[in-house]
Image (cartoon, rainbow, N blue to C red; front, top):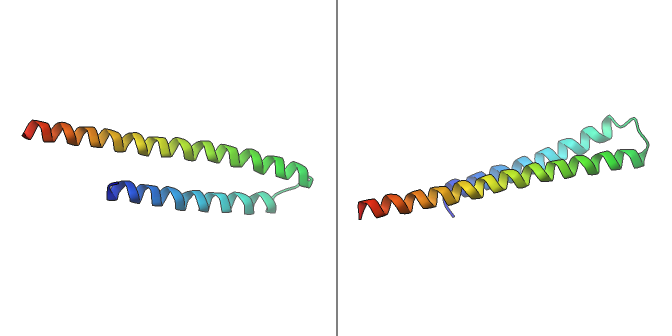
Length: 79
C-alpha cells in the first residue's frame, strides 16, 4: 500500500471519528424529541454517514487500482 493511500485512509478514519462525535454531540444537544425519536434519528444519521464513508473508501480503492494500472502501463512503455 502506498504512502499516499495510507495517508488517505488515515485522514478518512480521523474524519469518520470526528464526524461521528460531532453528530452525537449535536444530536444530544439539540434533541427536542423523546429518547426513542432521538435514537431513531441518530441511527439514520449513522447509516447515512456509513454510506458516505463506504463511498469514499471505494473511491480511494478505485483510485489506487487506477494508479497501479497506470504505473504498470508506464513501466511497460519504458521497458
